[in-house]
Each structure stands twice: as C-alpha cells, then as structure tokens.
Image (cartoon, rainbow, N blue to C red; front, top):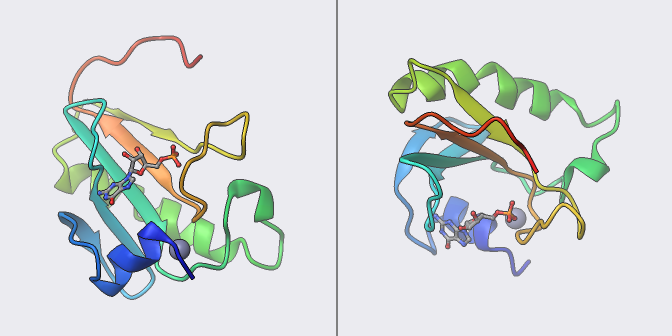
Length: 113
Ligand code: 5GP
Ligand code: ZN
C-alpha cells in the first residue's frame, strides 16, 4: 500500500518518534503548526479515516486514546492540549491512514474553525 504513515511505521521514511508500542506510534509532524505537534496512529492500516470506525474495529481507537495522557506527558504538555482528527474531503484529510493530531505547547485559540 502506498501510504506515507505505513512507510513511517516500517522505517522506510524517517520520523522523530515520541512514543511507540506494539499497537500505536506517535511521531513529530513534519510541518508543525504548534510548538508541539505530534501525530498518533495505529500501526496497522485497518482504518483509513474516522468514517471507517465501527463497533467491531473501535478497540484500537480506545487503546490509542488511553495512551494520549502518557504521550502528552512525554511531550511536556502539562498545561493541556488539543486532539484533532481530520476526516475526509471536507475535513481536509490528506493522509488516508487514520491519525490524531496532538497539539500544544502554547495557548491555542478558542476557535476550531
Ligand atoms: P491530515 O491533513 O491528513 O490530517 O494530516 C496529515 C499530517 O501529516 C500533516 O500535518 C502533515 O504535515 C503530516 N505529514 C505528511 N507527511 C509526513 C511525513 O512524511 N512525515 C511526518 N512526520 N509528517 C508528515
Ligand atoms: Zn497506512
């Protein structure tokens, strides 16, 4: 599969890893829009976007979210942070391997859109 994030998981594209276990990977975004901007992904490319989530495959998403406080601590985000998922065309999703942006390191704006 020609997927940038699968290539990052496989080590074919270098990345700065923030957290890794057998199920998920967090790495620094190549084009950060905040002092801390990490991408968190399931390693396995089962879900292309949030729109693919079902009751049968949602376990990995719950697992990923259970690790967010730990990844945030590793990233120095004691004052809080924002999690964003871009989904589909109107959501401006560019990489079709489900991922969550972890943003922080400064006071973020109140508006989401
Ligand atoms: P999306 O717009 O799909 O929600 O976000 C994709 C994100 O992946 C973007 O913020 C983009 O900067 C990041 N990205 C794209 N290609 C690479 C890459 O090769 N390495 C890293 N570290 N981030 C990437
Ligand atoms: Zn992928």
